[in-house]
Image (cartoon, rainbow, N blue to C red; front, side, top):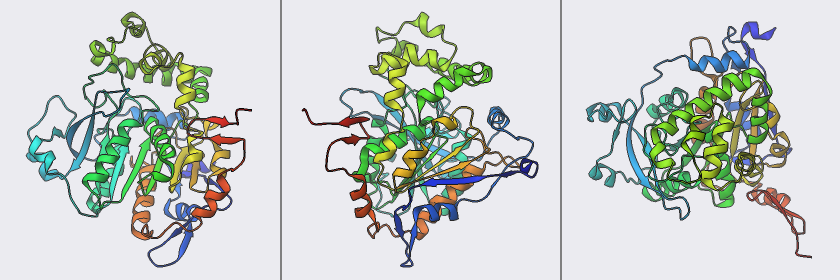
Length: 428
């Protein structure tokens, strides 16, 4: 009955000997201890006493904190998936309010002029957060802005990598975003590293964006330039979560149908470009009701997968978790009806000393609503990021990193390659 008082239970899953983090005071702290000290108790609205109520409350339209953006269109450098994607950079209210209103963009968002963007570079050392939104969302999402709002006044810079076609952006190639489309965030981070060489970079991903970010950090491995990353409400095992949604009436007719409807709206906005792919038929897409239908007739053929199951298995981030080599925090609610508990890779978290998983027994999907309307996860993320930046000495090598790597690398066959999700064996 603890929910009557709003108490949610918080649990942590991690390696028996997590990496040690050097602090600016000269001491050391384990990643798990650091995370648990940064994350506040989970106290939620007792009227929203389960994951369904918490998740459905997100449908309530609220203004949220005002964040102003300047948008820049990037041209993809990927050889297989060319096209455009939009990155929204946070600007001050003064700059945002002075800009001419753009009716073709989300609220409080305007385009950079060519001259403005050419002068964006800086040698300052302010921390910068890269954000990735959830399915069919964008920089305008309230849950994303609730994290940015307290960070920006503290001197943080920030940008949001919008999925292709999202946040009223246009597409110039017949692909939207997908759950493994790490190439756009990779290109963005390379640009940021070059343009702001002294800024420590951090990243946070939400839902589908959390899956993309987890894949990206895993793919980068030792070469990842991010200081730390956070994945919130990651669906992790996409195939398991897909089957879970189809198993119940609420899962299929409420959540899956709602997500399918949002994707249908995206398709209708970009139909002319998407149907340039001869494998995508307008009548098939228009008939889609659920997210699985859309993934079958649009996402799979758009990216070269034979079925939606093949897409899910390749794009899910469960195995990529094993390749992560930077401080990494994941936050999930075990009653999340979309990113379901059975898909969370608990054992993988126990195998990787660079990662820690924080689970709550209550909170839903990108929800965790508290009395007054604020979301607990936003406070948890802000606390973790600010404490990480203020207290951890990133100029010092991570103690224990060499030993941890030695334990994770096998010198003899068989060798598991987490980023390619396969067991490597000799030819004979």
